[in-house]
Length: 293
Image (cartoon, rainbow, N blue to C red; front, top):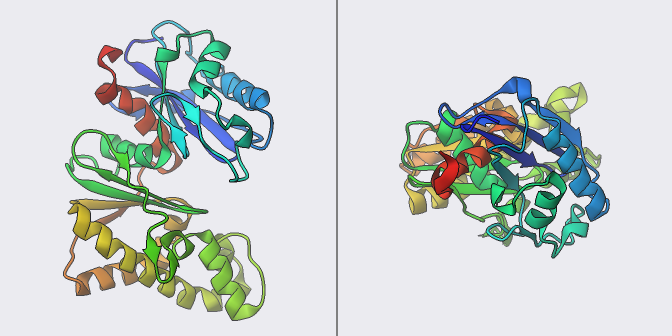
């Protein structure tokens, strides 16, 4: 492999995405992109094998000059590559496993050729490297989906802010700014069930409820953001995750509430989408490894 290329990997709840990122330009070679479904409830052996197959399927992949950066959900011991995930309905079989060591053995490389980073941090790092937050020295990021990912960047490498469990309106903030909030809000109004947020915007019968539900969501998000902004003083806020695709329905409310609080921090939607975490994981070699050159 070219010395300047790094294998970037994004581990999702049901898939793995991998590809080559050029560290000179921070750009993903889209022709190298590989995406495979993974049964995250399967055995450790089957999960590691799927990861191995995806990485080895990358066009241009080789063990020569191999460097792999992996965006991984937590909880996880990132420096040592040990999974601490349990009771989340995914990757339970990896709990306590030296994932870095086992994956390195499967690939036939040294474990020092692989390192893991938090997926929320990698999302923001990718946007800083070549997306919506490039040219900014201070940024915060949120991924809005089945859960809440939060991260901060202050000039080196983004880090997980881990605010999903922050106290909020008698519960935790993730209960108010994630998919499950929409599911519950819709059930309360209609007595019916939806599984995904996009059902509110795509199905005609739901559109009558969408405006009010999204407005309340925007108010919740703004209330949370006010504290986050005051703590971190970012120059820009980047939103990602599936819910951010419906920005037109909630972002005006968020901006209205922030304006009233005297906060004018620009809010941008991800430019890299699902590729952000992969690119961020690859770019971590620039700041965390001296031997990437």
